Amino acid sequence: MGKARIGVYGLGTMGSALALNMAEHGFDVAVTNRETDWIAGFIAEAGNLAERLDPHDKIQDFVAALERPRVVLFMIPSGEPMDAMLREITPLLEPGDIVIDGGNADFHDTRRRVGNLSGSRLNYVGLGVSGGEAGARYGPSMMMGGDAEAWARIAPILTAIAARHEGSPCVAHLGPDGAGHFVKTVHNGIEYADMQVIAEIYSLLRNGLALPPAEIGALFEAWNEGPLRSYLVEITARLLTYADPETGHPVIDVIKDAAGQKGTGRWSVIEALRMGQSASMIEAAVGARSWSSEKDTRQAAEVVLGGTVSVIEASPEVLAEAFLAARILAHAQGFRVLAAASEDYDWSLDFATIARIWRAGCIIRSALLDEIAVACEGDLPRGQLILDPGLAQTLARCMPALRQVVCSAVHGGHPVPALSAGLAWYDSMRLGHGSANMIQAQRDMFGHHGFERLGQAGVHHGPWWD
Ligand code: 6PG
Image (cartoon, rainbow, N blue to C red; front, side, top):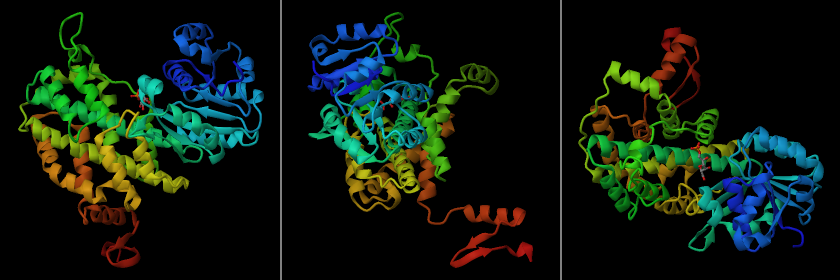
């Protein structure tokens, strides 16, 4: 083998799948891993593709095996491990070489590293990669942040390995420095919200309508044929068909109701708040995972507070409409956060491109994203999807269902943090006149903070100060 076109550092689930994907598309790939004893096993399992893989134990040999200017893709845990690797590899690289971080990195870290590496004239790329192991192996959706020169160099590889939606590759150069990692973070935020909405709908079907898992699975399967079609609905339908080999019970019933999180959902919320936004459905999803992990407290509280729930007054058809409304609202909140970041960081994000590359390969791929891509091609002030005529029409049709579901769930004692957050946001946004005049008046009365007056410029004070 001559020099390799790209090097992949990190042969965990995602790194090894991406290396195989590249090899399958005809690229020679140098590979290495911190734990060098993994490397031989990876090559042994690569089958025919091994002939395009060039394994190395030492980072010096790995770097030397790369065609110049070099391209190194890191698929390692985010944060300090990436900083440590940069310290190790930077002295081995030359101006013009490209370092890609394909992990779920905090975009602030990406921006800092771009700045730090500019002195050594290394090109640092933050690449959001979505789709899990199967996506990485057979076609992920990828969100690239970095400069145009780096994109020109790596685009042929990324375009070849990306998922395709009706022929168009789901990868794009979205903006400079941290733009790609930020967009991936918000992707994950929407993923959190959509997963939480699915969990709430599942729980209402199960505990509010007393349907067994197999029937709920069949409903999700049917929903996957219509406007709710999506990867997450598809896997929900599938997972509900499985029985636990040990007990024979539905697998869903033997899984502990406590969900972990690695941080991207939380980052979405933190960044939204920092920019004066609130992605309340994502926040609800992050919060619900945190509450779920307090299993001991919940079990104790069930005894003290009473853990009963009652039947809900909503058919599966109504739940499906509520689900669609909630999904639209979660995306609308996510796109609003993207718009705020685009303004704050001067990224000029193209929302239509983002929606297009999310139509295949990534975890949130769905029929709705087709509609959102079209909506984003129109004039959407500040990325506000709720102002798109088509989506507004669907919302008008489905909101009565969301209202009915939330009312009935609340009445029956079912927790629906994401559904209710979506409804509250919708109701806040659809009223041209809200309740913040009262907040303004209180702030002025207790703190002389002043308020804006309808139809008059300037800062005013209430008569209580006269
Ligand atoms: C993806 C996923 C992927 C990963 C999440 C899980 O787009 O492929 O989002 O990035 O599965 O990081 O995150 P949590 O562990 O926080 O749920």
